[in-house]
Amino acid sequence: MIGRLNHVAIAVRDIAAASKLYRETLGANVSAPEALPEHGVTVVFITLPNTKIELLEPLGADSPIAKFLEKSPDGGIHHICYEVEDILAARDQLTRNGARVLGSGEPKIGAHGKPVLFLHPKDFCGTLVELEQA
View 1 (cartoon, rainbow, N blue to C red):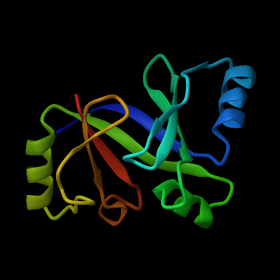
View 2 (cartoon, rainbow, N blue to C red):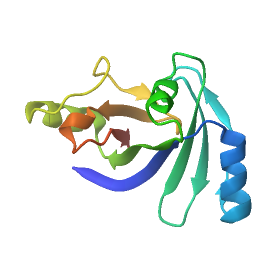
View 3 (tube, rainbow, N blue to C red):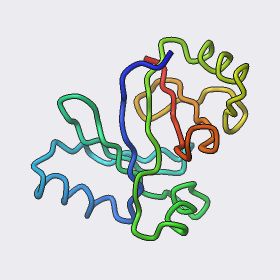
View 4 (cartoon, helix red, strand yellow):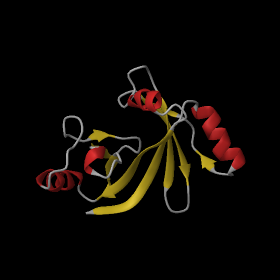
């Protein structure tokens, strides 16, 4: 069902400082920041030859990333994202097998302009999983 690894998301307190670290220290190609108010985050993407790293900074006090940073003040890996061919079929198969989809269960449009869903971390070895329509 799952396809390639789309990205690994890292929560950060200061996206400008984190972008500079990846750009200047690691020599990475870092995108411009993009605010996604519907998700409560500002994102940048670091493009690698085989995948991406997504840096997430809270956008507002109610951001899920703000809550994550309360528990992990230094930041860290927030989620991993896999591509799926058909997000609705994947959701239906996962829920039939006992996995929990967060939120309403309906896909939202993610940072790449494609439908995404998040799966409960307790159902996936403590890891928050994002599915993105390929």
